[in-house]
Image (cartoon, rainbow, N blue to C red; front, side):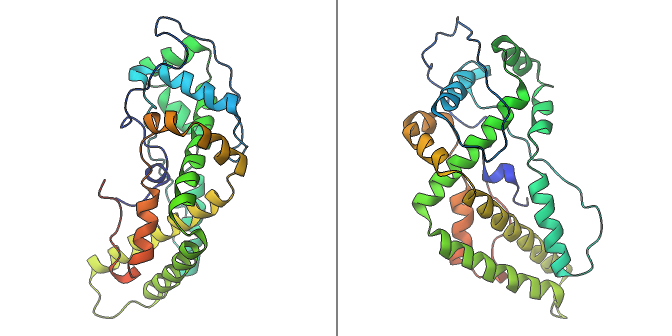
Length: 243
């Protein structure tokens, strides 16, 4: 499986049930949240609202974030054009409206959102913002960002050269692995650039709620994905997730 934005950020459904957040199960609060751009700073009230909403969703869990597949619109002519298309597709895969539409197909989720007066697209946008901030918090604490960025760039150029001029004895399977490694490297590079855009206020606010969030959100797989690029050569890099 090729790396996707949902694999790097929230996956949902694997988290533990959430402790009640200042309300009883029998009391369904009315929660107002607005749909804001992905990189808008998080506030304390938005994080509290997120925890309250999740505590009243089915099983008290974050709903699953399904991978958003964006099909290619044209066949690239060379490695450089292919990378540009991969970068575009990765960013287009972050579609909070489409995610909200998928959640609305679940009758239990639809009923839960409606009972709280929550618009699914507003929750989808808030969940995405929290997801990016959560990943930024984890990576900022565990990885040297500048070194990681340089290594990703080095790996990307090495892979592009191999794709552009593959060895004559390279098998079809090896070439497919090479293309998948290229796609993963591009995805990580774009994801890192997006994490660098996460407002510092969002990371600070989320760190205040770390204890509650550790019970609520699944562990991020992004650190492990980046670490593979720091220790592995691109030619032998394992492709995709095993999780």
